[in-house]
Every structure is written in structure tokens, then in C-alpha cells.
Length: 149
Image (cartoon, rainbow, N blue to C red):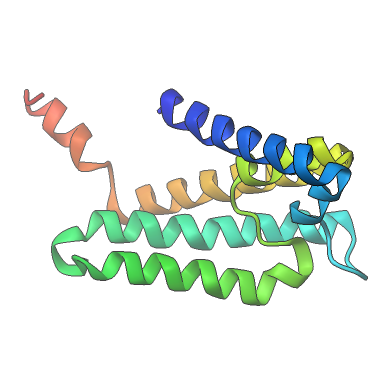
């Protein structure tokens, strides 16, 4: 899991670094930020909600992969689109700290980073807690308890 996070951040910083080299501080235009008329607190709440919804769909699709099958990608994609459509004007609907942090740092608006680091982390944590409450322990945990690998 650490390798996945490192790859996400490395890709984001590489892309933002290239964009900064090409366009300078205008790279901040690609960063998520609260929309006009929305406070940082409202944007923070929107990030929690958007990430919760996305992670709930991902975890639900993973739990029911036998019945969802190839439609999981459609469900996840439509969730990203819906969150972007409804919450994009509020917070930018980042749902991914790596995607937002790098352009914010290169663009000089890192003062907003707390929204996009904490919001998705809390939203994802709440989604995991909800999935465990609904579905129980992940299947891998049950196999380990039964002596499987």
C-alpha cells in the first residue's frame, strides 16, 4: 500500500513539476480550491462527502465483485462524474490528496492543502468504517483466521 501512495505522489509531483516548468505558477489553475462564494469549511465538508461516496462505491463493488463484475468500473466512473458535477463547484471534488497537493505547492496556494489532505482521509476512513459495519471483515481477514494465506 505504501508503494501505491508513493507512486501516486511521485506521478502527481512529476506532472505538476512539468506543468510548472512549462507554464509557471499558472499550474495553480489545475489545483482544487474552494469555489467562489464557498468557505474553506464548506469545501472541507464537500471533500469528506465526495470521498465517502466514492470509497463506498469502490468498497461495495469490491465486496460484491461476483455480482457487479465489469460494471464496477461504470459505477466508479459515474460516481466520480456525479461528485465532480455536484461538488466540483464547491471544492473542486479532488477526492485524491496527491492530485491536488502537487499543483497547490507548485502554484503557491499550499495554504489550502489541509482541506485536500484531511477531507479525503476522513471521508475514506468513514467509508471503510461503514463498509465494515455493513459487510463485516474483509474476506482476506476471514481466510487468515481459518489458516489460509
